Image 1 (spheres, helix red, strand yellow):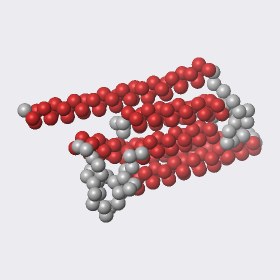
Image 2 (cartoon, one colour; image 1 turned 45 degrees about the vertical axis):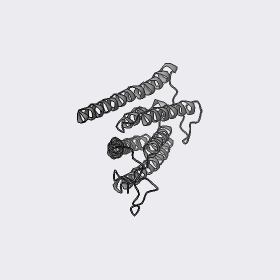
Image 3 (cartoon, helix red, strand yellow; image 1 turned 90 degrees about the vertical axis):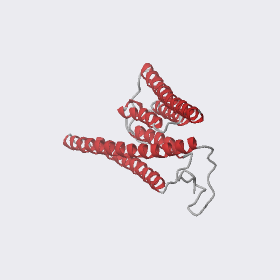
Image 4 (tube, rainbow, N blue to C red; image 1 turned 180 degrees about the vertical axis):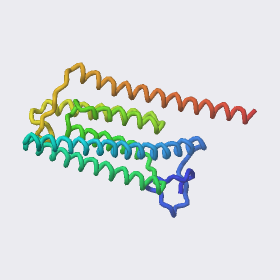
Length: 234
């Protein structure tokens, strides 16, 4: 069992040796990251629920319009997209449940936030590939991933989130050049170059801004710890 009550993969409940934690500050940081991962996972589940309910509503409307207009091909594409979206969301929910179970058991591997960021970016990119690609309003999900990384108060995770989201957006732009689209038969609309550039810059700048906020908060905490230590010594 670890001194902070949080276990890594290699630490079981029957072990009595403590994890190497150098100071009380490390324990506090570890607990804050653990609690932040709980919040991020909750926000992930809420966002998935809102997205899928919106998708179901749109699917019902599109299916009704397609049947009235006798557009069988449009209905077929809509059903195929709906199936793909359902599979991706189901995989995303299963990942969220796995993270929730681990956190409830106080199993918090140090690389879990990085793995969560990669999974979120990958699955969001898959959702966008099944839709309108880079032209979809769901691109704003990349910014949500970067902002949620800031809740972890770790600059490395913010950098990783910005990098993964930017890579996902570049993949979307590359897939838009394919005439028949990717995963589905529907081609993706192309965007003007300035639009692509602005979104890419916005993803990078969101990472920079969130990273600066995290850096500022951590510096304030370090300064407070140093001042408290000086007062205790005096």
